[in-house]
Length: 280
Image (cartoon, rainbow, N blue to C red; front, side):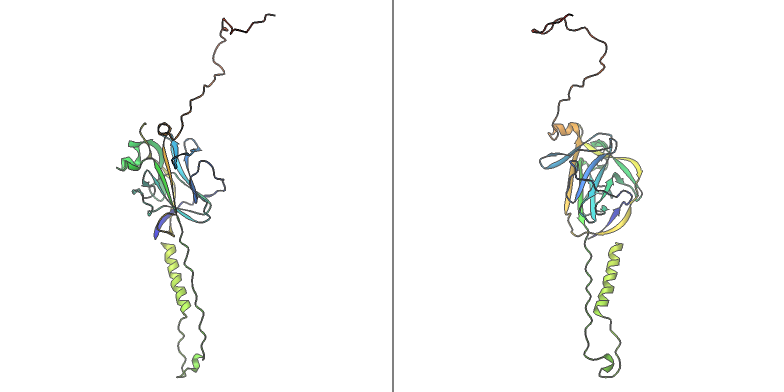
């Protein structure tokens, strides 16, 4: 199966960072990075699902780090919408190609080969999915991963030995040399290879934000399998909603002492029993 994929060379970078508690995935490590707060969002697990808490109004990006040792195609969806095509997401659609041990930051809905519209956390009615009539899957990020199909090996047949030289054939006239089977197969394989290379409160959603310059280019990627070899899912919502759902445990806010509360007050008139004052 051949699909047109996108490569964003400007955004891909070689990374050698260790895995951390903010990442989800095996062949690729996926994190949600809050661009406004300049931090990775910690992952909370409940019933085998990964969750992150987003801050309404903050811009964010999905970071996919390839640790597979070979090229991967990542088909990315946000709120059930393909971030490249805008279609209701399906794993067979277009995505981004990520080089071996490289990383890709997906920071918005792709509007053209040059620009994207920034992701930002927002209320469900303001989300891009709801505004385009598809609110059913708001609150989930998905990354479907595919490996590249390896090139077919070129088989070259050895030249067959002839019992007599061609000039010594029965009629004495040399026969025109026929192309070797291996040469014909090689030319056909070369043409095939060339063709392949050319080819509790309102749930939180993701808005269609400001336009940004984010260049990409089209590349050919033939998938090794019709189905993803790994699908990574991260659910997201506001902290308040995740607390209400039991995903995040509510922790009482500790008292915050004030080092400069005001003027000096009078001491208590009576001391606790068992204490005495000393006058000197």
